[in-house]
Length: 155
View 1 (tube, one colour):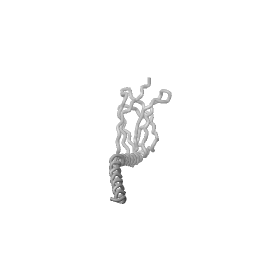
View 2 (cartoon, rainbow, N blue to C red):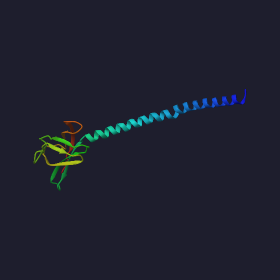
View 3 (cartoon, rainbow, N blue to C red):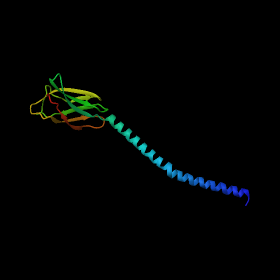
View 4 (cartoon, rainbow, N blue to C red):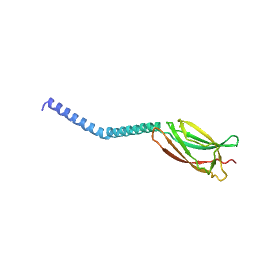
């Protein structure tokens, strides 16, 4: 055996050790990192889809407030979504509130806007009532949401 043979054996053994080390390194470090990268991309895609969905949705909320130096109740309707609400219909139980002017269908309620109405709770009105909202937006038509709203006490 001459020195060329010994050097060839050493080179081959170093190559084999290097390949074994690369395989161990892949399974120990690279493969879990690639799984994490795939999960991170899936989360990014889900966030993007939710953002796109939010841009197409109108989210309608209501609130009663006691205003006017203790004289009036106001009913506020908020659109906290990213899209205008079209043909917004409000279903308020008739036996609960007196309305000076009827609440008709609101043609358009832009995003981050408020629409207010003056209301007067009747004597037998409970502290909380269920109010339904129905509207159209870019996400769908005839979307409905029923909310239980608290009417603040005057005293």
